[in-house]
Length: 578
Image 1 (cartoon, rainbow, N blue to C red):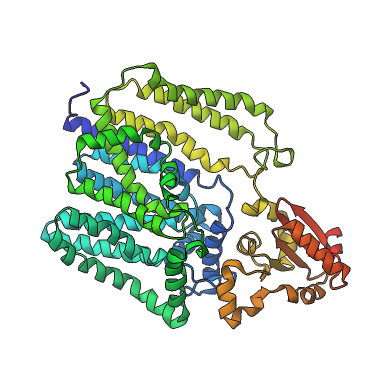
Image 2: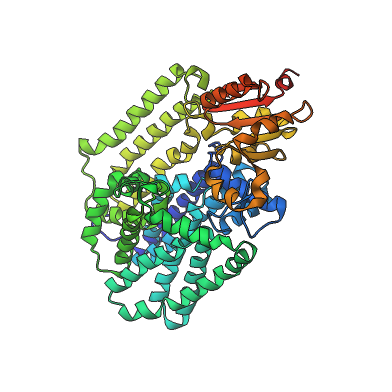
């Protein structure tokens, strides 16, 4: 096939089938099979594990609780998804990360369907899904037990269904608009009012840009009513059970976070998200200049290309205005970026075939060189965390595996430079990096990290002691203590952190929070049959504080274990000698 020829219908079908098989294999490898390679990350994953566990244990499905304390940071549906996974597969890391993985699959399906409608080609649609599946931020968040991947999936579904509704005939239009509204309502039940703001921010300017002024005032009513009806049952139920929920959730979690300036949670400068989206699009970001050239050649005259521009840029601007910022906020932008990237690259590669120049071989050569260096350096790497190794379990083989993935990636990049089919180059590019993206979850350098960021393995040997003790957990350990030591009597100790609002506004939670002035009394009640365990961060500061209490005669000396940013103290001390 000449590089300037348009592929035949039969060729498109064959390539589409091949691409969808590749996409399915890549998705299963990255999002399902390799999702458990990384240990639980604290506090986020532990938080979103413990709340569903408490729902199952207590039967309280309406008002979220964390460590027994009312926790109003998010609505309830994300917790329900995890609880359903726990009840199906057990309370383990695989079940914890399965909902975000499946919701990432929903995002991929939605952008595939959109790209198919935009280009009238299934082969390009499959490539857009592959770009999304192998981009860094979607892959990380799709295998991490937080709410961003499910939220992004239903924002994507809302936008795509609304677009289909705009383009549909009258008979099908109502159905698509209803589907958009239901998806919006589900997104609201996962993360709140952003589910309304983001689709409106994307779709209203798009309709105006496309000259659909009448649709701007007519079409949103159907999805708005569907969204309200979807969210209303739980919204009324939580108001009935805990009327304080909506006041806190709206003013603190939304308005204050957006407008509080340097006093907001996670304040960052206005430009914060622009480098984040570049990093999140690795490895595809390195080809973005070529994709932009392809898109310019294709033009932005279609409704679909205009929608993708609004979808990518307007949320970025919106979140850049916000005072509080986290890298995860812009995940809903990535489906649009993936579609633009895939179509732009195919357009560019189809009309500008590789010329076999030396400069085009440099990226693959660099990857192969790095891979060989990694393999050669592996025998000289310190084995475990205590000797300075990057992994606590002595898994230096990971570096050799990284080297192998780099070599494969570089070699496939060289192969892609010899094909004149633009689609084939994008497909090979996605497959080339997929191996590295898949194993990336297992590369977290636990040997170089503070134990408090991934403490489950460190805590496991203490489980028999914790289960027969009263456990006081600092704010950084209150989540993971419930996960690592299920069935233990665990109470929040010291500064309440994110649970401050719950303990200060509900008298019923007073006994679940032990303040420092109550500590000596709690220690005095510890016995050999019912010990007391304190686990917290800041071992230097906590040890000094404990020595002061002991020297003043307020408490007896405990047995103490410390490690990287962790202290575990036990009363009476002789318990550890038995």
